[in-house]
Length: 254
Ligand code: BGC
Image (tube, rainbow, N blue to C red; front, side, top):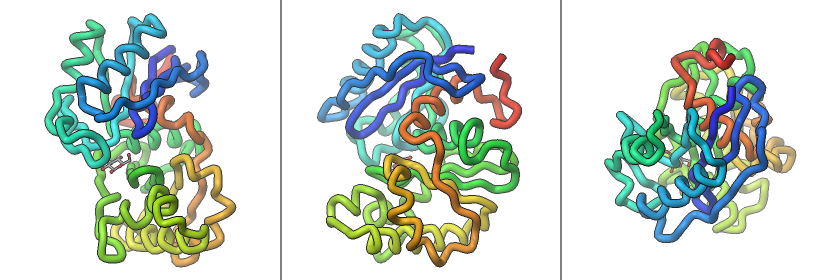
C-alpha cells in the first residue's frame, strides 16, 4: 500500500511516497526549505506544493513538531504561534478532497521505529526520544501509541529540558560530546524514574553520531538503543499515521 508521508521540520518540509508494508521510500525525498516566518499559511503552501509535486490523490499523513489533537495543532514550541489551535486537518482535507492525518512528529518517528526499526515487535513500554531542534517523546505500550507526550519540556538543570539537552543545545553552546552526552544521560535518567520503560530508542539526526555520545549514557539502567531509520523516520512515520488505527504491530497495510 502506498501512502504519501510529509514531515514538517524546523529547516525543511520533506515528503516521499512510502510503501507502508515495507517501510521503503518509493520516490526520492522532495524537500522545500521551511518558510520564515513559519506561519500556518506559509507552511501549508509548502505542504501543498509537495502534494502537487507527487500529483498525489490517495491516503496521506503529516508530522508536525507540536501537539496535534482533534485535527488541530495545539502547541507551537519551535514554529509560529499562529499554529496554536489551527485546524490543520480540515485545511488539508479541503485542499486534497481526501482524508489527511496529522500527528506529532515524534509520534510519527516512533511509529516508524516501532514498525520497521529498533522497536520492531517490541512489547512492553517503549519510549522513543528525538533529539533535534527540540526534544520529542513518543511512548508505546504493547504497540499502542500514547500520543502527544510533551516530556521534552520537563525541567532539567533549572530550565526547559529541550533547551538544556536537545541537539540544538549542543550546537548553540558548542558542547563537547561528553558534556552534552552527560546532559542527555541526566534527562534519560529523569524519564526513567518517571516512566519505568523497558526500552529507550534515541532518534533525531544526531542518532548517526550515537557512538560519540553513547559512552556517556551511564546512569540509565534500561536498555537503550539508537534509532535505525535515521532521517527517514519522520516521512515513513507520517505515512504510517495515514493508516494507523491503534496498534503498530498489527497495523493493516496490505
Ligand atoms: C515539541 C514536541 C515535538 C518536539 C520535536 C518539541 O518542542 O513540543 O511536540 O515533538 O519538539 O520536534
